[in-house]
Length: 396
Image (cartoon, rainbow, N blue to C red):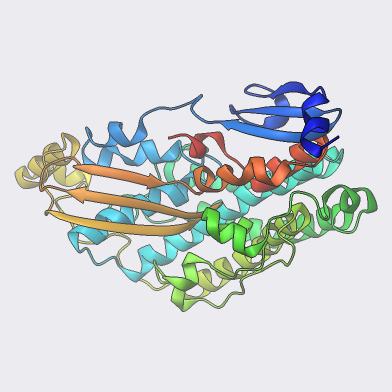
């Protein structure tokens, strides 16, 4: 009897993993062909929360697109916001003050830490370790309190503006940042003591859901998932933005590209993010926190109430009546999950002619079926958690 005949005679079961299964941590579906608890084949379904972000953006003024970017990777919204602001600034040729760039770096690295806290603690939860998750999440709450002090919002932040920051950091915000930098290392070390070398955790994650360097590159992986496979590509180093070239930091890389390596890369990146924030605080210069861009940056309320020109600019900006130059630009930042890019085409009108979001989740999720074939169902859950598939970023 041939191998094909044996395969044809076997009876397999079909299992729907999602779209609302609690273990998927999001709204997406995987149709699995199962041989007992072993995955024989998998088909991923994308499109459950399609919100037409790109088309919405093409019918909105540039400053009104920022809240749309919040809803991509909502675990690190400020990185999305500032990536979009930098794209528009690249199109209009704006020079951003150094102080505003350093403020952006502080916020983006806090966002990266918040994003990685979610991913790494959820990996631990999916192996049965709930205590560390509950303990470490209090520090994510502290980061949200910092965001709330800066812009008034926590999860979907709409933080910053085209041209820089809406306002300078208050003394209370600075105090909260310093408090976080003092206390978070202790909490992170405690979590690592519980998890990093835990025998159960290692047995569940080492050599699980691995992907090779070549295959990761072929699929277009970026971010921690690519670095876990041993490729040291980081947008902050390869194509620096917002003065990242001013800071010293290392790029953690793995070797096997498995679930454990993805966990460890994100863990080490949190330490590097704290290192960057400390350098930014130490070196932040005095000066303005936004560029001189009256066409995009709202004038102060005092001027709006007392000066006709300020009132005119305020009205034109809010109503989206500011034209931008014709052009075609691509700008990318290192998001929590990898290269987050914005491809913008302007025809000189008040809205983008075409805007495409390069969402890292959408890119690397294509490899998920290949990564879980031949593994146990329980391993597929861990693989998904370690890839940090965010539903909002997966399906724009």
